[in-house]
Image (cartoon, rainbow, N blue to C red):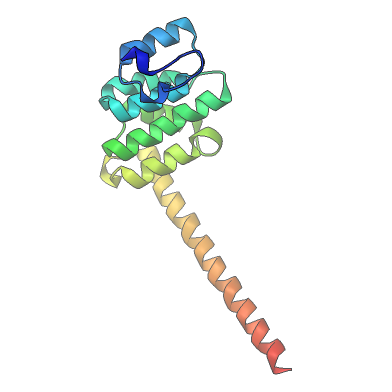
Length: 154
């Protein structure tokens, strides 16, 4: 299958389905590893892809790191759960920046009962913040509608 991807150009590496090939790419210091772990998230079992995704989260290239977090979000979507090491890596990165979308994907696609405690707190926090933002939007819309009605009466 190695003929389907090119590590020099990055062409096709998002379709990698061999964890050993990704390990060899790490050893060689290839640059498109973030894309490769997305392929693993889609094509391999979670327990095989997880250590490589976590390793790619440590890359120095910010674009490849972002792709590694995308792979974690994809793994949550596809499997309805994550491994303990992926949960720990997402928690260590925290909300914002690279991990924000992966954490939100995890909260969306992993059942609440399967989430570790920190993620359960994030679910509660996100629910409250989103509800407050919704109520604020309704309040602002009502005030604007009342203001427009008063202006029309003049």
